[in-house]
Length: 116
Image 1 (cartoon, rainbow, N blue to C red):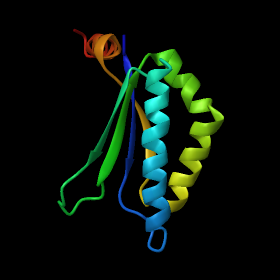
Image 2 (tube, rainbow, N blue to C red):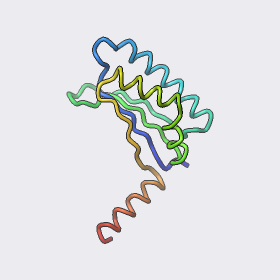
Image 3 (spheres, helix red, strand yellow):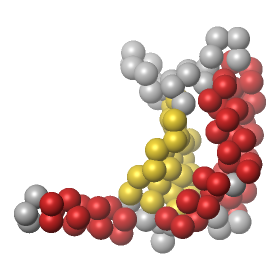
């Protein structure tokens, strides 16, 4: 059961690299779909945000188990995608996060720190 996420966000394509960014988006959707079919991630959700004047305009949320997501971050194909995304997208980043039991554990640790 998923206890972690990878939040993979970006602002907008680098000027002049818009076509490459579109092709990368399509490639990434296929790649994440295969990861899901293969059981390497539980699910993924692509999101494009409505215009709002901010610096986050889209993201993918990948859900999975901690160990599987850690392994994914070292996968050659994933590393290549991250490198290409950093080249053709402004404000690109990959941030790990917690859900489910992972969230429960993190909140419990935080509560103990606060004396709860």
